[in-house]
Image (cartoon, rainbow, N blue to C red; front, top):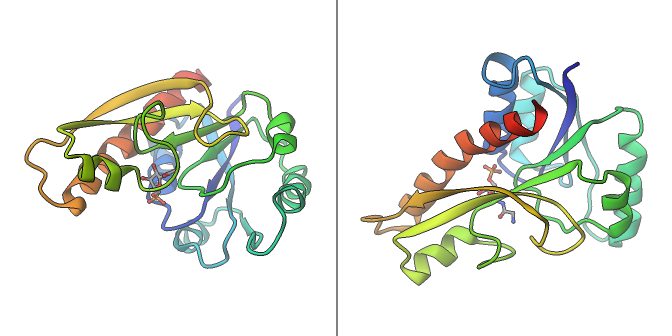
Length: 189
Ligand code: GAR
């Protein structure tokens, strides 16, 4: 049975696109289907792409809502989808403990840094400002902390000769787009 997954985004959704492609024609084809793309912002660019592909989409505006109130609304929405996994892809929110408890070991995130070294936003800005020659991207289970969940896998990103933030991001995202699906493949198999 294919795993039923929801992908959560907050913005442009380039990781979401990469995963959708792998589910449709690539390494996740026999393993998973994307049954929902969810955003916490109606303006998230990735929603349009998901709609164009005919995927089910939903959004609930998180702005102004208490974390637990918002997460409860999302849980209610998800209850219709019978999900096996929730895949966070640029979803810029910490989840409440109630939300995490509803999907134990079923929520996965990608983080653009080594989570033991840098948590929160702007992982590539951090690597660039630190002048790192190598950084890492991390795929991890999600708990209620900020990028504190158990690490599933990490992949290094070679930053030698990358002299602009744009180049650092370009190299990092190229790794993320391949590595996230590859790691999900290992989990779903
Ligand atoms: C990605 O680099 C992802 O790793 C990062 O946000 C970007 C989203 O890009 N996530 C975090 O920083 C989470 N702490 P995308 O919307 O194009 O996938």
